[in-house]
Length: 320
Image 1: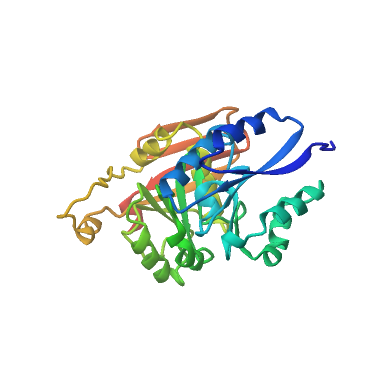
Image 2: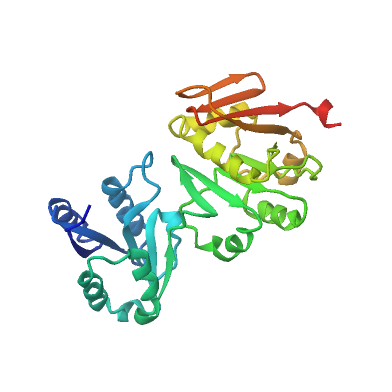
């Protein structure tokens, strides 16, 4: 199907938002790429972002706002702000905005991401695009998920200081034996505030770290992918935060208190944690419904007829 809509860029600021958003919504003949203009006022920026979400973001359907970009002096992360991209000009005051618009609007058949990438040098800006394929942070049905593995380790160290809104409620660590020490150090650095921290393994001989709440053993070569898909799917089984609470309760992870406590001793609390192993098995589904069944230490999640996940606690006696 041919898209005959006119392509335009609309610049929305804190001051003009209410007027401009109405023009955008009423103009059905135009396909808008929306630029949110971020200033040095963090509260106004947050307000602007929350207002645009009301019109263009549904957390139960959308990964991110595909038609929204942010223009800012400060670097942000698209996956954090749930936008298509962040444009950070080297000199915002001298950014050739009108020629940028002209170039974009002259070509109705362009690929937006390619256009943004190809014009970085011409218009002298840094660009961060939303990462769908291999993100190290993302939201799944409002739940913040942080991925720690060999591929994301350096990205996290380089970019975590740019995070403004993301809170890692679930941390998923892929452990393989070799090189795990640096992942555990990173987990120590940034993973303490998560409600659930799981280590995915495919060998039971991998040394246990109490920096996690449990290890999940998956006897497959693509064990990390299977584990992440399970978490992603089960988070959609209920609305937030019930999805997170149900999983935490099944894993018997104590509710964490994130209030400031001057007497809190992290090492002491970690040493008190139980060593827990679970096995996760993926099979063909046996029900048309998406449903979770819990029987003591076994959770069965049917994701339609295609997939059935069985998460079972491994007894300490079988580990010895």
